[in-house]
Image 1: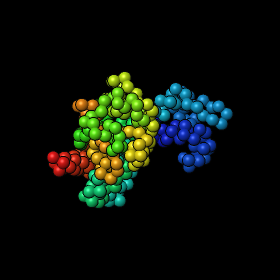
Image 2: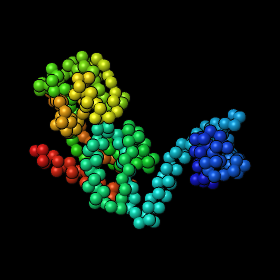
Image 3: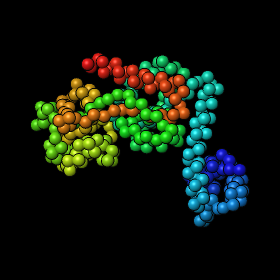
Length: 302
């Protein structure tokens, strides 16, 4: 019978590259691990590894087992962590993955009242899942995904949280600053500053520049919104941000947000989660708090 311990061995040998290193991590002697490896291959009736000196390389069968280990082991680890939290009287940890660079500031406004309402639930924000969030949900690495680009997948549920408009941010003394809107052609002579994301995942390209066959004079990438806005304010380029965030920066920096095209670019932020987690009360409460907070914010703006 294939057991969890076998998957642990497959994963760790692949990670460490040798039996010696894997045995140390797994707290086994090398001879004990070698015995486990031989018994596994005998049980399966096929080789899992090929030996290349002291190194181990997975066979096709081994690659299949590694794929299974990468899917199943995180679920075991998540369940064990959850059980430990229950045993200690805690509800759990809400792990939030981010597929939206500028949404971090929005998330901070939600987390504070959430922690106050759920004192026995911790929150952990994982930004390393930018544009890999669907796999992170299926792999139980996160519980909620914040994304502007939901993908319909069986077993997942996406809830719209708020609407926003994507705008172009320019210095307030820019020649376009007083324009009612900008056209793609007007950006052709600009330095466009964006987050470090592939252009086919950037709305400024997919919904504005690319359909018009326009590219900016130069494309720069910057990771942090603060530095990006300072660059724009100093005349080093222009950038695209959600209007709500652009206006927050414009309140304290010499910036002007402009509509992208006559009709603008309308977007939504979604919270994605596993369908099987819908009944978890503290997860559902986070979603409702996020939706309620944005609804109140929209009423205040109206």
